[in-house]
Image 1 (cartoon, rainbow, N blue to C red):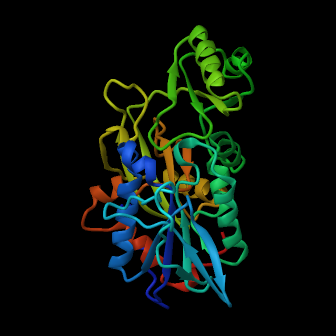
Image 2: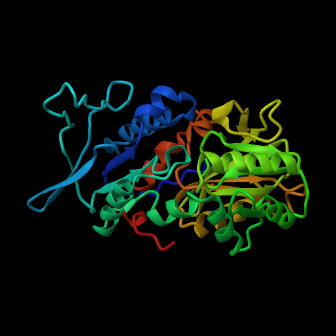
Image 3: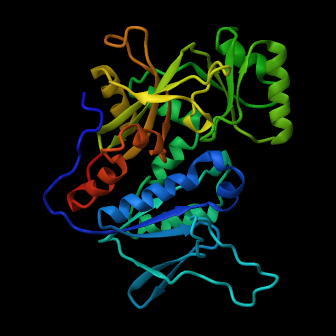
Amino acid sequence: MEQFKSYITEAKDEPYKLVIFNHSGEMVRDIKDTGLGELVALMTKSAKAVGIEIFQADFVGAYISEKGDKKYINSFPFDDEGVVIYPDTKNEEVIDYQKPFEINPSNTIIMPRGLGTMGLTSSRYWVDMIRNLELDGFLTLPSLKSWDICASKFMTDLVVRKVGIKTPKTVSIAHSEDSERAIKELGNKFPVILKSSTGTQTGVGVVIIESMRSLHASVQMLMLYSKYLPIILQEYIKTDYDVRVIVLDGTILGAMKREVIQGDDFRSNVSLGAEASTFELTDLEIKDSITAAKAVDGRLCGVDFIPAKNREKEQPYIIEVNSMPGFGGIEKLNPNKSLTQNIFKHFKNRDNWNLDK
């Protein structure tokens, strides 16, 4: 399989506007290894390279305004490093905003990133702002439906299994004393993986559990931190690597192999230092990656899986579907073929805005 298949339709090549929402402030300054700032910079550079007018907006302080029949996005400004400049409300009488950016459903795509920043529950206002735009006919990538499914690892597991996808056995933990019931559903087998259902893009908060005592203590500690934190327990599948696949409208754009971090035993996040390399998918891996993406309403998403021992004949274990995937790792592996530019070129064809999924 060609790793970076050109996915550009020549007909009806029309420019458009792109609004990238994110929440960059504290994350880019204090948690640099999340890669969010680097990703937004890559997307901005790639969009400009293919002639797309781009506007970066931070969720904090952003709002929609209207003047006559025209609609605008308003946001705080950004510095040269792409970090939002929040106002000092104690010392500034006038709050500084960027020039309002005019948007229209016929020529503007909305790309909300960071709705579930660091696995935390998003501000309802942020979600409602994107929902407002969807109701007005704007194309959003991801859709709120896709974001809602993928924001919960437990819900993602339920949804993809219903369409025949193979996943590690997964159970939710309902309360601090629910450990014994949960481990019984996994056959009383250790080790297991304990994680927040909301997850993070850095693998933070994901732990391997070796014993009942450790499981009970870890669950109680997490519940003490947040009484209503959604926690899942998952079958541990021993592997030396997993695979990230980027899917766009039912087509594979690229895949990369991510080695398990040395000394970590199970995590393979590139943002944590995992080694990445290009990867050739089997027909079955292609099929299941596309099926999983469609199941979560994902037009542009990342599908992560652990390969089967017999890759040609056995289904992979789909471990996650990310509605807001990072492209940086795959992009660096193929510097002469810009995956990000190909994504943006794909939507220059207006026929690709309203596909039946």
